[in-house]
Length: 85
Picture 1 (tube, rainbow, N blue to C red):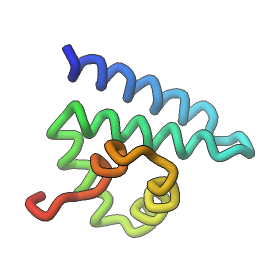
Picture 2 (picture 1 turned 30 degrees about the vertical axis):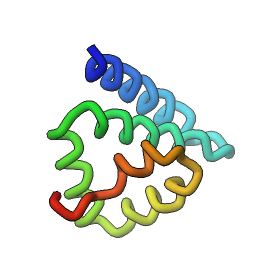
Picture 3 (picture 1 turned 90 degrees about the vertical axis):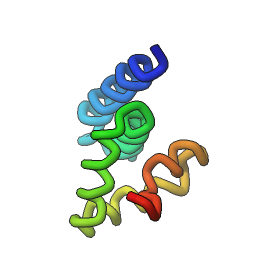
Picture 4 (picture 1 turned 45 degrees about the horizontal axis):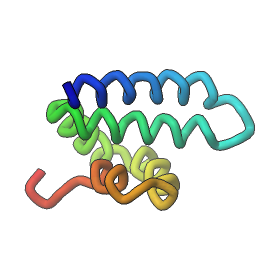
């Protein structure tokens, strides 16, 4: 049940982030990163794909790094690839 809630909330944040991305306020990128973190917390496959893409694409890593400092610790931990991954 918790994974389903994380998935639903993550998708909602991704959609809201995509909608608000063109606005002058930085809410779009923050919502996209929060949505990705929620999906990572609830889905191992998404976590593996996300961390792989973050390692392979420096521009993505840079954009996520800009937002990570504003996120709660649990979300920051989900976005950071671990040593064993």
